[in-house]
Image (cartoon, rainbow, N blue to C red; front, side, top):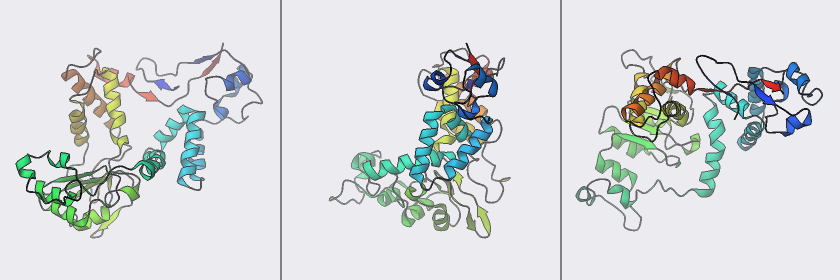
Length: 344
């Protein structure tokens, strides 16, 4: 993959040395950047007449890709377009995602998720298998109501018996968090935490408008898919987002910076670090989402990555010297910027 890794002492892209000329350049392992080749690069590599005469900046290419994706008539066509874009220029596809970070995760993931659940779904969100109900002490679980004709206890029975205080949805079963389940959860804690995380939106275990209605507006809600604001008593409440994109890149940066040998304290560290960026209840804007936007405030990503790297050091599994932790995190940062093409 092209692109650059940030280095404090040298943030310029390292030139990509290209031996071939003309058609050999476009047929080789280097990406065909099309209008991203400058006129100087085109002349040096004998590409005049083989690539578009007009030159587009990386930002212009990203916006053109976004417009062309939006012109597709259905989700699968959009997914096919992005697949072709990735095969054509893997730097450009990541720039597309970075420039449209709020919208990109469902655009990129949803068609794949839909295909998986339509063809290979093996999760039954309507029953909880015995092996999971016995995560509780056996004597406690033995008195739970169950239907012997089915392989386990219902989610409603588990919630009632365990007195759950949070619901985390990863089942891909739309509507699995029913009104009775949510109300039972809300009766045991103030406030209940409910995270219908499955994507796309029609596979979400519940929608925010129902969750807030069933809990009298008390629930702390975050979803996997972007959803419209919900009106609660005249206040537009914006559902928080909790997709993988909020966590995985930051976790990866910290782990890469420290060359972590294995996991350990990293997940707790990233949880604590993200929590520090949450708005305080006393100062939060009315209707503000539970979590910060996916496109986080300046510095949040670096702060979380540093927290992960510190946890790796504390856990004794770092394989590099992290005396300058901030510089190490910067060095582990990848930017979707194509290197200059240098004819040799």
